Length: 154
Image (tube, rainbow, N blue to C red):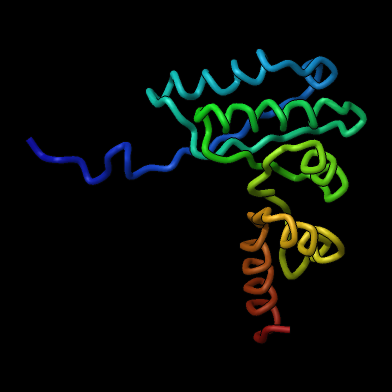
């Protein structure tokens, strides 16, 4: 019998918890727990290394409660880190000020889209929140298309 190249201890499990619609106006710890238990059960693990929360309606303030419930799950050893996806600085600060332990925020950030430099990078640096940028490949593809079209990078 051959040994696998990777074992479960070699893999880090990152997932997203998407809150959209009704659950945003009625956020509960039970709902968050269900959203954590499902991938753990499917993957046969007892801990998720990173859970990134996505929220699409800032008018519904339940994101603060959800971040606190995730922080409680972290303290209980159910998850390793609480992350965010596409949150702005103001909302992230609300969660941190309420006591949520935010480890990272995955955001659009590239040479074409430098909005995080306005406030977010400074806030994150002073509060120990890492940034996970996406969209950087788009710049590469854009640069290549310019090169192919004009024969030089501009």
